[in-house]
Length: 102
Image 1 (cartoon, rainbow, N blue to C red):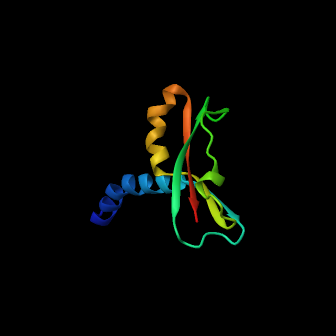
Image 2: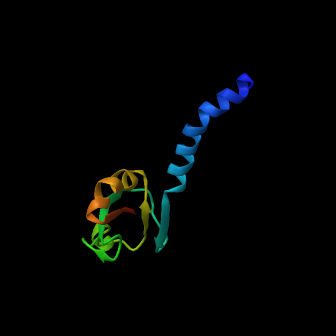
Image 3: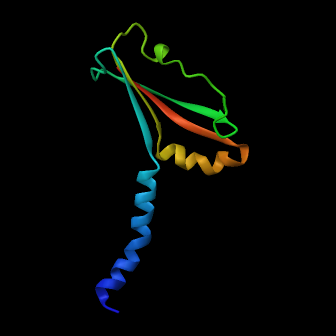
């Protein structure tokens, strides 16, 4: 076995972890009006019970961007949500992050 093959085998677990982490992030972007102008953003976490069957809390994006007609909404299952998943799985709960950019 060559030294190069051995070094590849040591990097394989780190590569697999990086690929699975990046592949697990799902994001949806919604543009309202002309979209965000870059003046600010607000983030909230939405919780679901029974693995998404019932919504626990309501996220009102219009309250997050009051009196605006142009903003963007991003809903995602990101890294923080993946870190919360093992803790919430026994409670059959999942999360997603909602970000409103104004």
